[in-house]
Length: 370
View 1: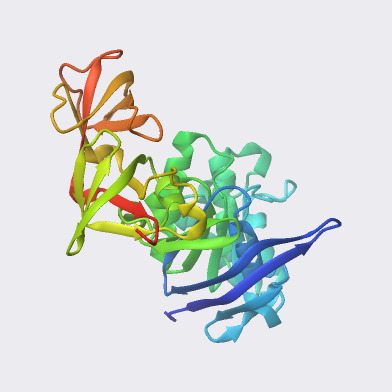
View 2: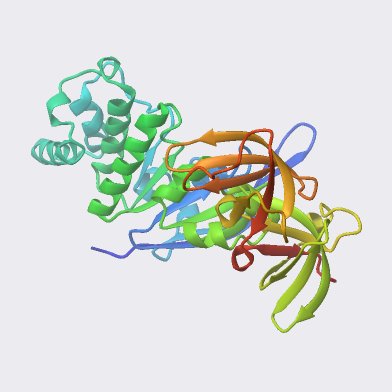
């Protein structure tokens, strides 16, 4: 199997509106290789869908290049790019049955009928849809319709599979089932796939690597573990999973570590340091040098207040595999979330509690001149 290679160089998209020019995608650079499952993640309007549409040829490029196996895609039509695309809306033909919907792209390409039957049968078997080949789309469930859309995108052996919010119309349980199904099929076929979503859990679950977008810019690229444990900006730390933030002063530096003091005087020694860009540095509270970020599962919670932050437990939520404690703490930017694998004895709603911080996993986001 050919090892495909996608390279995006300084890609930009500017929409010219009546009142102003809007930069939807701002000079992004990416490399995706082989059978990688790559996810573009970010809030609505961040540029991820515009980027995938430019890759597909459904949106023109303002500046930059899209190279696939060394060929400049910007010079090719959508049809010439040989890309499979799955949309949020499924876009099935309601008057064609499952087999006919999947075969449609092959007929357009003037493939021999014997080959069409062979390919469609194979792909329906792969998606466990063979028994539904004669059904019409209105007679299928949402998950089944999504499988048909995926089969139609894969049947002509595309060089790349693009999926734009493909699970947005499904209920929560079916979303989990379908994302695992998509991942299984993608790995079995060994096809490069680019997945667009605003759902952080979904992105973390299926991706080999993911790219976080915000306001048209590419903020960070890495494996799910890298992006979650070592975010490179305040935005990423807050967007990927839950995070707690504590304003801090830098007391002193010692080699690669920094001693910081929180607002109650509690001191920490941290070795994970990220210098903030000017725009994010402006969000740091006046008079402070930075913000300490801690994930909810890296806190401890107890009744002893020695060397810890103090707070009042507002809410306790049992969430199956862990219990979440929501604590009002005057030394935090916002309400503090603490996640524990089991209920903590002696901690009750409305009661006092102390919050501990596991220093090796805490990150200091600091101003550049501090």
